[in-house]
Amino acid sequence: MVARPTRLTPPVECVRLYDADAGLDGVIAIHSTALGPGAGGCRFWSYAGMDEALTDALRLAEGMSYKNALAGLPFGGAKAVIRRPEGEFDRARLFRAFGRAVEQLGGLYVTAEDVGTSVEDMREVASESRHVAGLPASEGLAGGDPSPWTAQGVFESMRAAARFVLDSDLAGLTVAVQGTGNVGADLCRRLADAGCRLVIADPNPGRRDRLAAILGATIVGVEEIASEKAEIFAPCALGGALTPEVVRNLKAKLVCGAANNQLGALEVADLLMNRGIAYAPDYVVNAGGIISVSAEYLGESQSDVTDRVAEIAPRVATLLDRAARERRSPAFVADEMAEEIIVGAQRVAA
Ligand code: NAD
Image 1 (cartoon, rainbow, N blue to C red):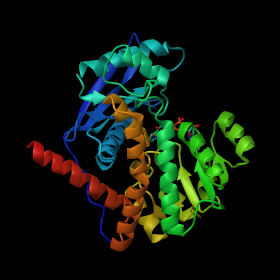
Image 2: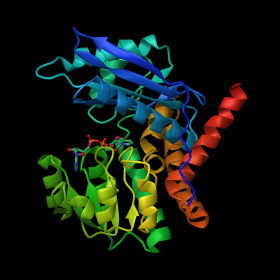
Image 3: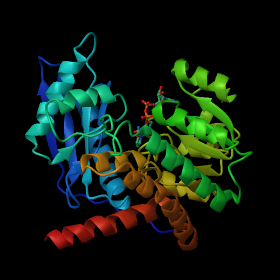
Image 4: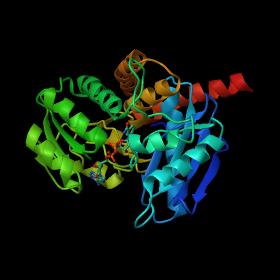
């Protein structure tokens, strides 16, 4: 078995976000600008402290560098993380303050939605900065909520991976979906249309219960979803879904989902392989959202987005095939392919 190569460690630029009056407290991490401005969403979440927020921002920004490179986008990797204030706060004011900080970077960082942020929040950012996407789309142009594009890429990747790994169409398969938020819910609808049986879990009952009623999905507890009897496990909640313990108890033969940073630890990729479980790398399958966001920022058309999202599933199939032939984790093969692209751009720039 080949050890996981160390990931690229360019000098990461971190910009502290702080405006006490507006309740803004967070960080922008810019991991790489070799391919273009650092692009990645803004996460709005409750963190115990700044250290935790910074760790998350660094990890997510690194992931964006790899994701953007492999998706063939002219962007580097970055991410903003804002700590959700406790108690009452003026949300519009907070995001306008964030917009001013983004504008001050002069285009080095391009923001959009991520977990906890909405189109409405990005509208506030846009009132202060040009360097934002994920805004309502104009006729024929790319734009709007990136989640449906993410869900489409995940769905098509899952179909391609099921053919490769299980030699099966999706119809009749059981998929355990962890998280029924924007992407997870959309994915569930597509899977139900394709004839899948669904098992779902989410601590937030609103959308979860509606989905169960409409799609006939079975609800299980958040602690049980990963060990449910299913052919496919789809992590669509937060990062770190695949811990060594989770992998030991997985019954699925394929993991393919939208969540970023699914591998809780480096050795998890090998644990999956040793158990004969195929892993469709998170940042390859979930690139639909950033494809939409980048096209919007560049003023491209919706058909550009359609074409690029359609390339995700064949890329996943190629990657799984190469990984199987080389007896390596698809996670490592994807990293290597992304690094070749980033390092190539660094060489051209030097
Ligand atoms: P979201 O906030 O709309 O949904 C996340 C859902 O996960 C929520 O419903 C939440 O209640 C649920 N959840 C939290 N902890 C859970 C747990 N332990 N078990 C089960 N469910 C749990 O976010 P989203 O936009 O749907 O994104 C989901 C994931 O996909 C995130 O990791 C995000 O970074 C990633 N992603 C999203 C996009 C996009 O376009 N929205 C693009 C790429 C990657």
